[in-house]
Length: 206
Image 1: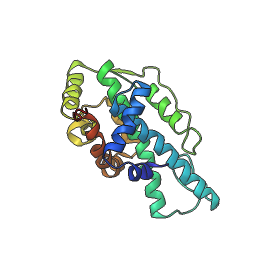
Image 2: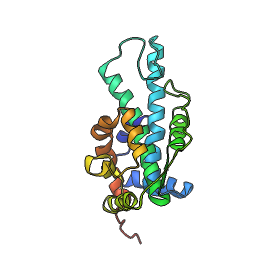
Image 3: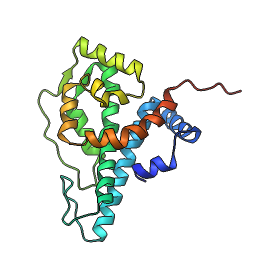
Image 4: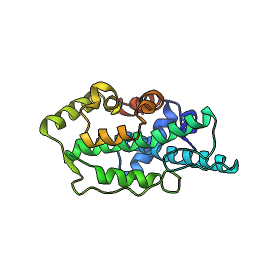
């Protein structure tokens, strides 16, 4: 599918909750991590679909996201939204790991990013750094935990008040990709309304 198709097919509600809970049990992951993974998967599929459509018109997509000929505003927006969905999903997964391990490994993150884009024109070979593990200070770690306690969807980390609590290297990576505005405008509102139903207490069934 794509990010847009996924959001259309699964509005907030019981069907989405059932899908995520089933996959979470299969993977032994949290509900939030599972939903974040869906954004990564659908974003990759969306980018691939756009690239195929453009290729059929004789338009190539370059590694930086540029194209060999002009494309429509709708196609550009869709490309950016699906790319942002991948970055957002991976960032949310990294946040969950950092909350548990008190470490952010930028090499591991970039490796997962490249793996998620494999087969698309955006795929690239990143240059690993020697000192890739960022050990969070106790104060930074406690700040992250406090934010996650208030917002178990992790969406708050992508807004200004929560942004500075993120591992420094994760902030740098997200900013370098220039997709934070797209994440805030197009991804977060849709994600948050769905994720909230996954972290809220569920009614007992008989």
